Image (cartoon, rainbow, N blue to C red; front, side, top):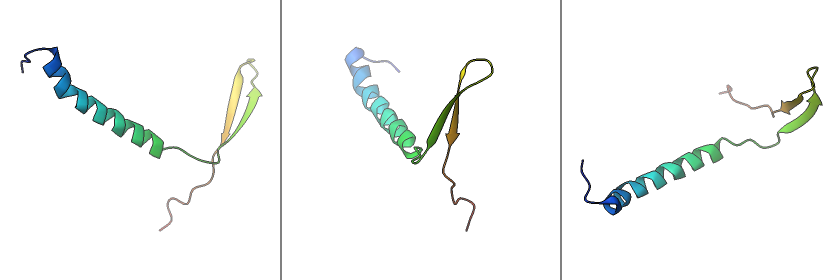
Length: 62
């Protein structure tokens, strides 16, 4: 493909890039979890550890 100038390229691909960014944002938002607990601790190597407590899900039941 050849484009006449940068504006033509931008007018073609700009909306496509925006659609992809919107799709990615909606996908990430749909993967959020509520009621997540975090407990912080110091490990033996003096680094911080995070322990996540996720709620139980009912997946797998029909």
